Image (cartoon, rainbow, N blue to C red; front, side, top):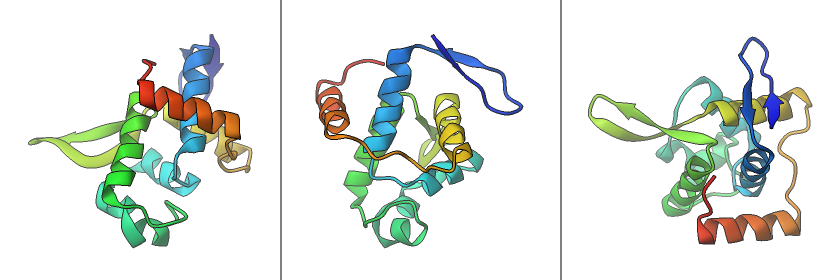
Amino acid sequence: MTVLDSPGKSSIQYSEPTLKRAERAIRCSPFQLQLFITMRLSSVGLNGIAGQSGVNSAYTSTALTEGTAENALLWLIQVGVLRREVDGQGITDSFRLTPLGRQLIDQWESQNQGIPQPSLCDRSINTLNRWLRFPV
């Protein structure tokens, strides 16, 4: 088990496979660090991520269709990095970081390195995991 610490937060233990899968999923996602930093503080709606608004907010480097953005966000939910916001009427189209996602983003942000680029091997494994939908 690996323990990730966030300043002022309690430690949560995650297995190495869980951490590696989550890190790989973030690295292979079409999203930039700024999106995750924003999601750490507040929820972000799908309409703020997709299209030109995502590029203007530095959430993505290229404009994504709504379907592409939602599909990538749903994969990050499946690996435990994000969660969907819920309001009084049910699930919304907004997303936030989970504790696992928060700890990974805090780690990358504190190192001033941004999100590391995925290798070809990372992309292949992530694609296979998404296709087969291996559980976390």
